[in-house]
Length: 487
Image 1 (tube, rainbow, N blue to C red):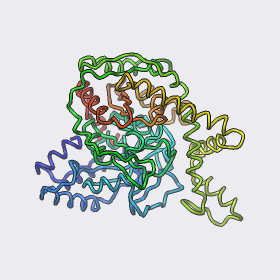
Image 2 (cartoon, rainbow, N blue to C red; image 1 turned 90 degrees about the vertical axis):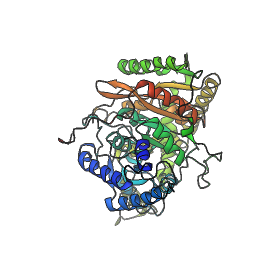
Image 3 (cartoon, helix red, strand yellow; image 1 turned 180 degrees about the vertical axis):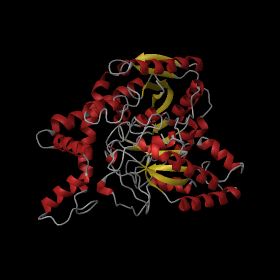
Image 4 (cartoon, rainbow, N blue to C red; image 1 turned 180 degrees about the horizontal axis):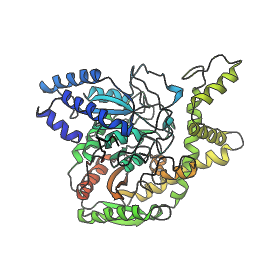
């Protein structure tokens, strides 16, 4: 079942939340050795207690949301009170937050049931979930391949049926790229639409929290719960509350979609292009107008992103010094030695690489040449998108230039790894909403199609994707895991 289908069964009292939780834990026990999507699985008794409360509310007809009683998971960089929140890093391996992230509290108030915290690239820095300090998550469609990253654990557990939905974070594609590689739906909302309070920061001007789900309807239902203004986040935008599920099923005839030529050329595997273009071709049956367009600054998006994001990471991660936060290596001779040893042991190779890149870009004599220039390019990219949206409702691109690659294949080649974000970083730099939906398969592995919308236009974006998803006819598929063999 999708989350929506399970919720309908709950409301008809055909099944209880406690039964759903038990079924999810049975599924976790069966397939988790072959997926390794979780860092922390909560004690079943704790989840059953929350499910029991949800059942009481459902029985009384007082369910606080359409997803009351639904088991779900959270990426392990979202703070959960009293529950380990590690960011998949040795630096925070013992951290138990004293408070809940805004989104965690909203989901709890909505009556959903948390079953675990999912694996990720350390501090959300990576595109494969190979950078976790604890273990590598495997793609449920093929255990020899990566699930994408950095929200690879969240994507994998949804694709494997270990949770009805999960939340991830997206700094340069970290929700959409693993969604594409695992064959699920991944939504990055407009910057400021979902509060970042309680999200352990990577790059504060780019980070955004969003859902990973089995289909578009589920994504709309989750976004209904987690979106909204929060005074504790200075970048949270105060605006009237929307109900995104209300957009689903509405007419899409007359929508205009742009296909940037820069996103369908060099670097994109032919098989991926063919699958995406076949899906795009079906839009004509919806009465949607498709036209080629150009966003010349796209070629500068990746270098701009890999200056802005590491610079902000360098600043955000400076707090982990062995004195105030996280791991502390004691018995050192002096303060400098304490800093050195703590950060050396606490951070993995990719995090260190990005801290060094960012520190260099912010250093005296290089700030104007690198960081300031990247900010100017970011503004130019946004302006080109705004101009394109004057004549178009959405932009459609592939989500990833390849299907999921083999574990270890790109681990020692960071530049190739960074190219996985080539189609996704623009939406983060511009602050616009974007979603990846499954659109087909190449050699048995899922392929994702990305739709980028205008700021705060998630409703119509979901409306379009809901119709397209129905036309493609592949929504809601679970990954083909052999449970008996555990692989």
